[in-house]
Length: 298
Image 1 (cartoon, rainbow, N blue to C red):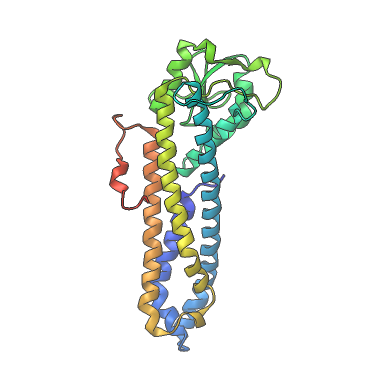
Image 2 (cartoon, rainbow, N blue to C red):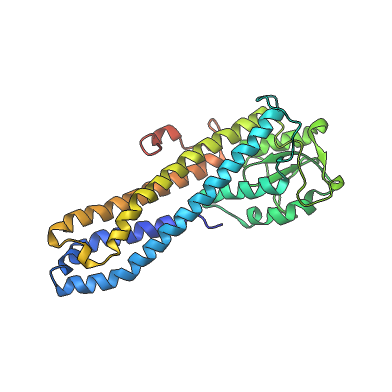
């Protein structure tokens, strides 16, 4: 899955360039030679901007779907912890280890920090945990807590304590061995192994809930950004004749600056989410307060 950081940086770059060349583009409607050169120079980049915007929208859609899946998975954990009440006789939709790992990797992608360990867990996890008892799953970074107290993200990669509070909670749960909430993976026949428990502590579930809520708000803001700006971009791509002449130069310049500012805001939101996803409020390394972003998060 692509990350959002690179497309947003590119969008910001192209939008800033458009803002700088907007007066020349508008002048081209009057047949000005410099405007004509500017238009042809930028037209290919505007097409690339359109492609990048589409890629960002697809990535946002993937991440929104992943966040919704994570929320569903975590709700089952809440039910099993007694934080919610539901008839548990129908377990046909219980998520698997692989489901959870893929979703967690998607959440990590929102922060632009997918690593090899995140990417390999979907295939490595079954072999890594086959002879162990699963007692907890950690969201950050897409890792499985196993019964010997280690936190594995692939066959040979371990996460040490202090990466995030949710991971620490999962490791503690694994070390304490909550036997009645575990399932022996070796006894389950298929790759679609189901877990009887996804989280084993109230703190773990609540930490995931907070991350889901904040990630959902970030993604909703990004989605609104692209939806609101797409029509304007398509109008730019119609060609110089759609620009309206020199009198529209200032408006076009504002459009470009507006897009660039939105891309900058989106970048800050994604980067802020990356920091927030690693550390819970109250942790020494938690340097971001989402209340500072109430004007950007709708």
